[in-house]
Length: 575
Image (cartoon, rainbow, N blue to C red; front, side, top):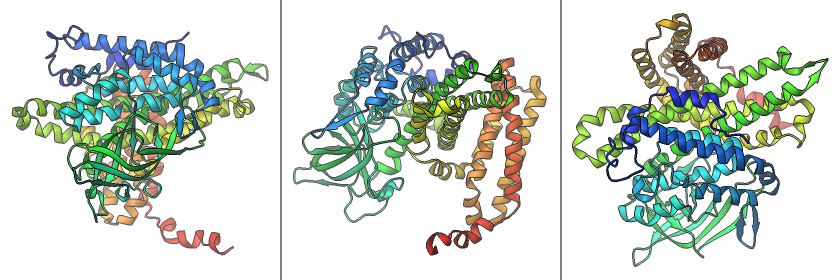
């Protein structure tokens, strides 16, 4: 029986070496609860010990209980009958274990029954759960619903809803997407209207709602009559009653244990969360950014599972009188997989740390308004970093996870295409990660501004000033060369002042930025470990070829695809 936390040396490396002292101080309000609460940490070391114990419990449940039931959950799936959704037996049992272990209020304060853990640690837990069963993570990972109520709800709403989330009495869903408003949430048309007594009532349809059968949902709705844009939209807390009908659940390629529902609201009573007209522009963006971190962790967890399957198979499969992992065609695949998983993981933890600092500063200002003037610059800085790095990690981890699962099947050969091995499930499960919570293409749209405006270079400057890379000078100079290439590409795009050309190359610029950031992070990791130096060297070597090739493409000023796309595609309409 494996513990999915303890058996992962890379996660343990980060737990030992990453500096989240500022995160902990903010999350614990400088350990204000240490006298009044016996299980509140007394200092940073105590907090890290707590996190280690929590993750050990998560790892034990994931490896010893959840993983073994995942194939059965995949086969059985969630069921829909007589208007109700039923989880697979293994899903019900796993959720019961997690509830009994008090793991359903990860990030919430202790006063509401939570365990007050930062998102950096929560991201590790999500990865561990996703490695065991990606579909279960879609339910476990929806704790962001409660977190959003905590950050933006009234104290009355917090008291009424949050303790029920932390005990597992209620589960959550975010009802955002509609049949005609998928990625374009500004087009949401589900209506929210107040009756004569001031009660908000919801009317309309939501589609592709993960865990749409949940007890409590956050519903995005148009509250302002006659509006068409994002400013006319508010966010509502809806507790399920007879006024919401589940119309069906989707038949999906993967994550079968997670029900994806189409739901209809018919004069469903709801509560306004926060202020009117702020639902999309503030609350939902915060909610989705948290969800994007979770999906990045989910993709890494699935990739880790697929890698281990491939590595085990390659060690046992003999062809031409030797194990196939001794063939260069196979061991190069395995090395690339391992390096790219660790690259995604270091980017995830760095991103989560910045989000934790941003939210921690916001919390500190809310608790201690007198500190606002001292913290406003730091809040502005970490808000910029979080806004850039969140789409970067979601895009990179999801695309990486898809490539890893594709390659894991390739390592298995023909049997990987059958249902006898877990890799085909991982391949199906991971496919959604670069689609939901914003496709990779939308992550590029979210990130390109931070690349063009130079936010990425501000963060790279901090890496350079905060770390002494002299012991790995040659390696770090190679990473800096990537930065130089990125700067050249960004300067060229800005000087052209051609919005169409910039949009055309947006993904290339964002991928160059991601390669550069990860190279810096892996160099920082390399200061702590000789093995990590080798990981960094391998990643940077491959990144140099990618970035140089991309730079040449950007500098070419080739408008061929832009200019001729209609002529190239016209045969589809005329044949």
